[in-house]
Length: 86
Image 1 (cartoon, rainbow, N blue to C red):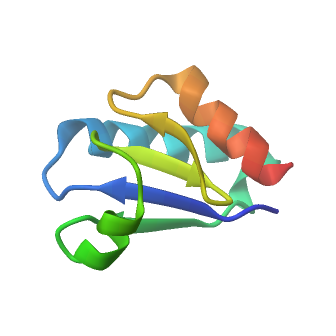
Image 2 (cartoon, rainbow, N blue to C red; image 1 turned 90 degrees about the vertical axis):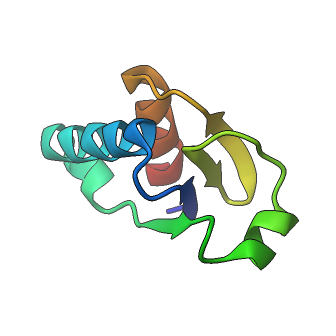
Image 3 (cartoon, one colour; image 1 turned 180 degrees about the vertical axis):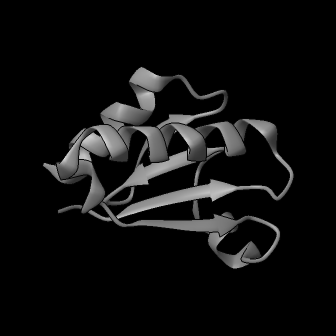
C-alpha cells in the first residue's frame, strides 16, 4: 500500500467533488477501502505546500509523486486509488 497525500482548499468545489468520487469508488471496490489518504488544507500547512510542486487543487501525490492536479475526473481519481492499492 502506497501513501497518498491530497492537497485541498476548504470550500473548493473541485476538492469536494474529488472526495465524493473517492467515496463512490471505495464503495464499489473493496481494495480501495484500504487506501489511506492524508488530506491537507494548504492554508493549514504552508511549510508542506512550499515543499511540493503543484498549482491547482485538488492535487494527489502517491509516494511523493504528483499523479493528478486540478479539476478531477473519475478515471484520474481511480488511477490514484489503483496505484496506491497496488
